[in-house]
Image (cartoon, rainbow, N blue to C red; front, side, top):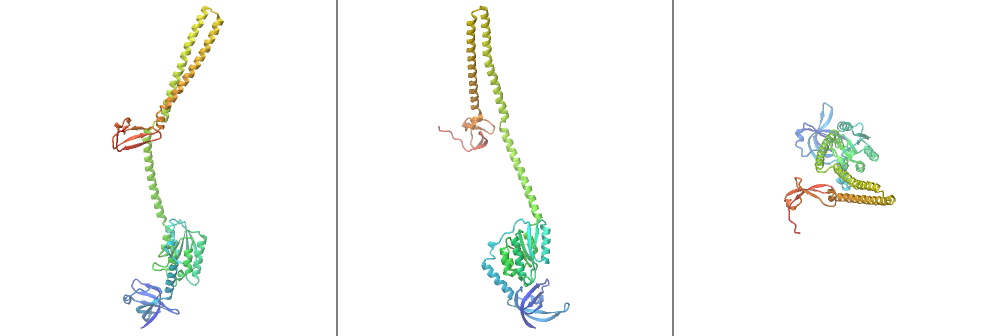
Length: 418
């Protein structure tokens, strides 16, 4: 049994409680197992990148034919180089303000297009497409293919993000890949990837690794999702939820419209019962005008008929007496002229009188009285109020003006001192 120092990688805690991981350094690596009986005495839970020292025996795992370290004890030996580099970059970018919550952008409520930066062969892409097809089949998808691990992958991820930002053809961008060791996820810890995410023209959702995995890309993104599938769920709301909300809002709008129409119809009926029909008022005035016209015509015909009868009598008397016809004709012509003048004057006088009556009728119209600023007061039974003695405190009266009417409440009644 001997002590071995190295960096933790591919750490897995099985359901049985056993720990499986790889112990490595710059030039070599070896598999290791720490069974539950020994792991329960460890004073910490190892993480990816931890630098540890283990006391172990070299054993053979017969079913696979592999040599491995059977760990009896484990102790911290400092953090691994990769994890230390991760913490240093995170601290520097945090101080720079790249992870400031104030610069985070909210995701759009309704998206029409989603961009995905990941490998076309990744299982994460299949999970994302399956989720979007189930939740939001109306959303179009644009794939920006890129390797997600290996040499040069960080630069290619950056180029894919920059391409999506420049084209601006999506409402939100997903940067995703499945889980893996810290080495597999290291491309998403690159500074150039973090700066590309921060500078992207659209909101970015990061879904890298499993729920316990954190990368620099997660901190730079506007929203961090624990898994690629969760990233798809955050980016696009379920169409069924939108349809249910739309149906609910539509029903509420219909109910509100029906209530509003019923209320306005009731108000219209109320005004209709209290408003005299303009057609009826015009018909009444027309009958009055016809009656006055008939009376005027009769008044004009009667003097004329009387004058004509008198004239006929005079003509008969004239013929009987056989006076000087020329003189009488001249006198008759004069009388006719005077009669015509008198008739014309009478007609003019009658027309002036008629115009005066019409003006008085217009002035006496209740509507004109209301238009001069007066109003009509009536109680709840429609009885006109002509004296303050008819007013009672804490009651309401109906006030009609030239343009509309209103219900007015009376708080108190005081006699005028004038």
